[in-house]
Length: 170
Image 1 (tube, rainbow, N blue to C red):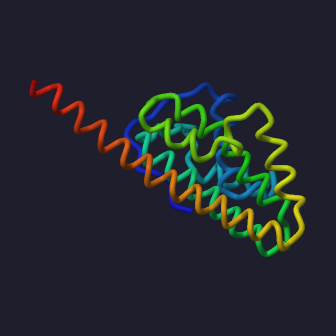
Image 2 (image 1 turned 90 degrees about the horizontal axis):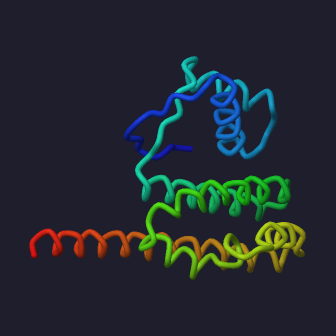
């Protein structure tokens, strides 16, 4: 998995950095194992520096990760783990989404039941437990929603850039 282009670093205290690093490792490894996550975290560097990425590339990477996990879950080998990994990215996605209301609007409209309702976690759990046939249909629909959300978010960012440019000119 390729991470977003990062623009700056944030230095965390040792325990906080380890927690964040291990959390990122679990997300990157699809929740495989603590040992694998720890190895991944150590490979990220001993200085425990967490990179803060530009908003749109970060959000797109999270959505791509989620779509990859959903696609993998279609194989039914370990559907619950893959869906758990995908849904585990939701809080991080929602937190960064608060940084820009224009980019947030299409995501909220298109991914409402998967991220923005009070029972979003239960929706993911029910999704993971669907029959294979129903799961495949629901997975295709969710992946389509993710792709549509990415396009709409890109358009919103472009429109916001044009509006900001016009304000600067006027």
